[in-house]
Image (tube, rainbow, N blue to C red; front, top):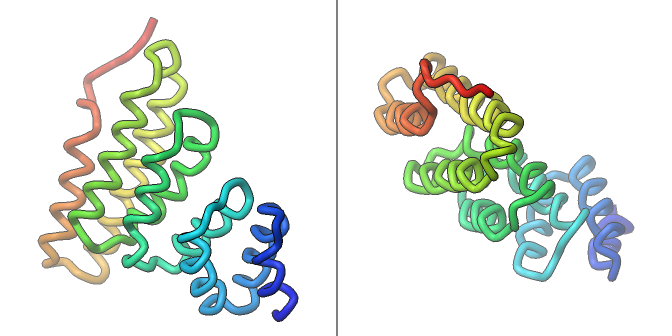
Length: 172
C-alpha cells in the first residue's frame, strides 16, 4: 500500500493513475481520500480516469460538482463519450436532485452537440444505454427501498422528459 500511495504522486499521469486504481483495490477509503486530494490538482489521462472512477464508485455526493464539472469542461470527442457511462452510473446513485438534474443536462448538451450526421450512431447509446439505464436503476431503487420518495420520482420524471417521444423515428 505504501508503494501505491507514493506512486500516486509520480510525475507520470499514467503511473499515478494506475497506482490509484491499485490502491482502490486494497484500501478503498484511502483511495477515495487520495482521489479527493488529487482532484484539486492538474491531471489528465489515466490519472483523471482513476480519480473519477474512484469517486464515482464511492458514490460520494460531495464530489458531484467535480465529477459533473469535469465532464462539462471536456471537449466533444472520444474522451467525453468514454466518460458518459461513468457519469450515468454516478447519476444513478446521486440523491441530490439539483445536482442530478445538472448532470442529466450535461448529458443532454452532449447529445445535442453531436453533429446531425453522427446522431444515428450516438443517440441510441445516449438515450437507451445511459439515460434509460439511469431510469431503470432509479426505478429499482424506488420500488425496493423508497416507494414514497418523491425526489426519486422527480428524478425519474426529469430524465423521461429529456428523452425523445417514442414515435419519433429517425432514418434516412
